[in-house]
Image 1 (spheres, one colour):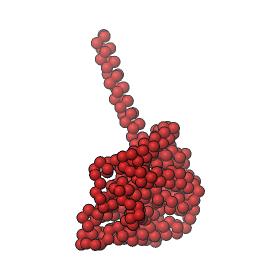
Image 2 (spheres, rainbow, N blue to C red):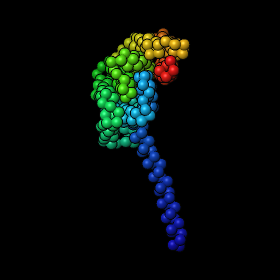
Image 3 (cartoon, one colour):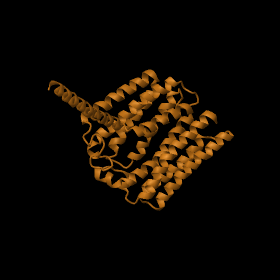
Image 4 (tube, rainbow, N blue to C red):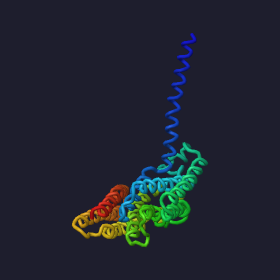
Length: 311
């Protein structure tokens, strides 16, 4: 009888352990989800690309420190952005399943998480990378959390302003490699990221315009129902992508010439998608423009990287 009891108790304890493990795993995944891992991955790729493009190959240790510090600061911005918008996120079908509106993470925990990460990340960058990179990180964080996020409730210009914190991580990589911000190439790389965001975010703003309106966001697709504003931004941004592609990958050799042609080609592809969105503004053309943008940026970054290494 005693043996049977022990076996039963062991099975119950084992079952409890199995039940607790998935729960703990789900809890951890919710905190990771708050950091927006896919966006974070793109930011880190941008940082590494900029470090290589700066001209002096940094040490692996520098690359690692820059990525860790940037990841902490960027993740903090994403967490605090969601913390500030948690009530509106609950209204939108696109965001209602996020950790905060769904109740998987407590509001106070997210706030603490965001503040701790930005402090740790800033100190980390200032101590183990350099002060210019830390300043660029703080500028990125401040613009995203304290300017772009509240501006979404006030003015359609929020998307234009939001292109700056979306592009500034390229300067974090540039300065981490000891590149000077007085170098025109640093501004060209910033321009690549700023221009790319216009067709990308105009597509998103159109696809979810009804949800944005319900949540009270002043997106240009909400304030200008004609769609002309979104069309103009998408096309101008796509044209700027072509210009910056030529500037970022100057054809100074046969290889760099080929890379320049390729960079221009993917930017022209983006422009064609934007023109189609202008001519037939609907979900199909908006989604196509979004999908093209998701390929155009990494390809352009790849061509810039190859040109810096071998061009």
